[in-house]
Image 1 (cartoon, one colour):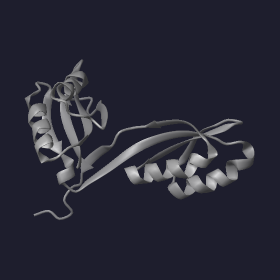
Image 2 (cartoon, rainbow, N blue to C red):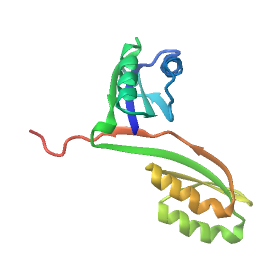
Image 3 (tube, rainbow, N blue to C red):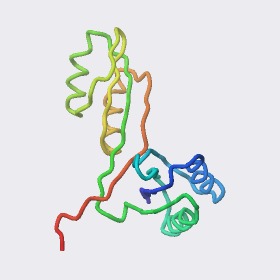
Image 4 (cartoon, rainbow, N blue to C red):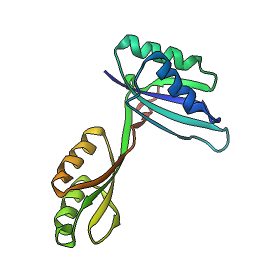
Length: 163
């Protein structure tokens, strides 16, 4: 099963290398990883890992991550109600004669044009994995020149009702 694990870490040199090194040393696979500064004030960063594994693997991953010095907090957001998104940049072959047709398709997915040339168009799209994959497959007949896809990032939703 796929799990999305959020880490709050100290934003220090080599922290991502230590996290990925732990996975390598234990023989676990990271499906995707996304890291970025969380706060200017406290010097922390967020790392989101997508990991596949049974309950035993996820338990081991969580235990090993909690042992790393720079890791402040580990949470498996998959166990909660969460919001998750990926980012896609995709460049396709698109001569001027096809732009209207392609624009209609991309509007359905709510993608944004971020670059255009005489021979190509580049789009940005955010969404869940299924939406990103469907968009790629829809554009495939036009000829995909390049794809850059982030890993999933996620946040646990606030409870709708306060006790």
